[in-house]
Length: 313
Image 1 (cartoon, rainbow, N blue to C red):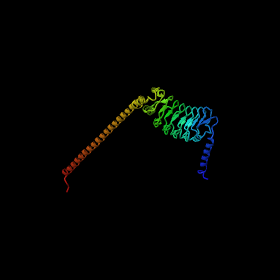
Image 2 (cartoon, rainbow, N blue to C red):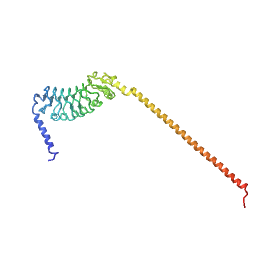
Image 3 (cartoon, helix red, strand yellow):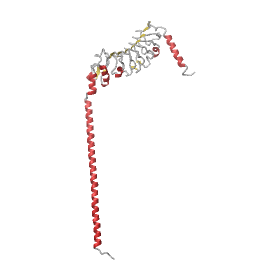
Image 4 (cartoon, one colour):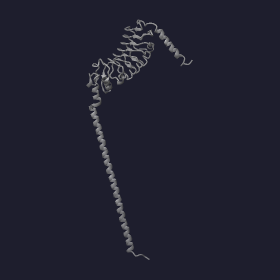
């Protein structure tokens, strides 16, 4: 039996069988009724087992759960509502929600999230409402975090550690209607400009827009991020700071110095060329004068030899 064709399918069938067996009853201390499983406020330390496979609503709020296992969660293919608020979940991986394609409501607020993988929500194309507020250790979101959640209409990002959010993160959410952004230490530098302009031009509602303010830089501290687009555009595009003037002055000085040196070198080359040409012209004149004198001397000698000394016979 080959390794590729043997254990693989059997292991899959075994896992599925275990899921069917474990999903045939209600978790201990939880309430199961009408396709809803409520394990709220049960001091659970881990994700509960034995959740019925036909569950559509799963309530896990107010516990001490640290992670969501993709394998067990993936068996709940009919799940449309998942409440995990007020737990201790630290991170979400790309495959966490790989099996819950029908999920519409997801609440991950008040956890200990420090990172969300770029494609965590990529399979949740039916997701309408997402709440990841009150996660103060969540410092950043990848630009592809909401790439495939095209049905998303409600997004809550309040009270996280987000300082900046990529423009593409919200731009691709064409169905988005409401966004909460307050309570974050927004850093309204030039990197924030694209998002600021998007907030100005989009038709999305920001109910807490006046409370979502910039923390940095100092000159924009306290400004609502929904209104900081124009000041940022002036600061980052049309306005020149002191450093810009210093840079332009240095560039101008360098150009002036380079032009001066080039002109000086050109003058030196011209003088050297003229001197060389003058010397060559002087040498030619001397050569011609010397040739004339020599010719005259030879002609004079010939004259004396012919007239003053008789020719012997």
